[in-house]
Image 1 (spheres, helix red, strand yellow):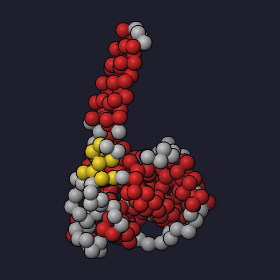
Image 2 (cartoon, protein in one colour):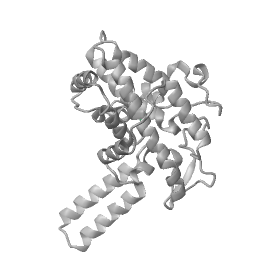
Image 3 (tube, rainbow, N blue to C red):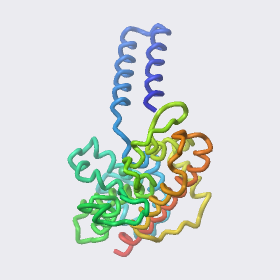
Image 4 (cartoon, protein in one colour):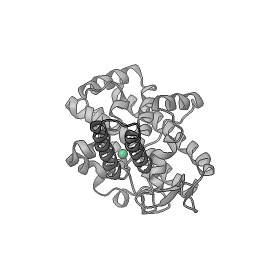
Length: 289
Ligand SMILES: [Zn+2]
């Protein structure tokens, strides 16, 4: 992404010169290109399903809400100037820039690190001080469900729940290998270096060139029988087992088409499950007012 963007920036510059644009336009292009390059070079490591993955989960869930849960969700979303779950689905990641202090306090809630390949959740070991995705979903779900809480607090909890239920279904957000969820596992992707976490967060999904809306419709059309049950602990343990058993870690460190053909359907299944389970959770927390 960064390399392509930089190349694009250079092309724009030379294009501007070639067609003899005014000096002013050239300067404008130069400034834009430099800003683009700086932005791309400073991009921090990924922390979650990319924006597209989270929006897909939110869209899938929203379509499965009961009328009561949807009415209550809309009331809370409006407090945040939002209309849809997908509008708030990436807020927890965006905090990195919009509210660094809150981001710092919630940073560890985007994932859970198992410390053993048995993939059995052990809270004192895997979720110290309650700072992990499992505990975060339980915490914010409880805040959301309690109508005695201030509406603004419940609205914030809704945004966190929408995001963290997505994250916990991304297999590398519940990993056991002590490699920062694949961030430290370097791979080759289409001739350039990246890391495995990024492949799962966004590169595989983005390679389909489907928008979140298109992707959601594709997933809805393909499947209608997703198990909605389970607990955050079970969802995390599932993710861990996928990392361990389903070829997520390529021995060659090379992401080829065979890898994508094998793993993308698993990623899509996790999105479907996340959407269905998020809906079930929200129907429970918001539905019986
Ligand atoms: Zn996240």
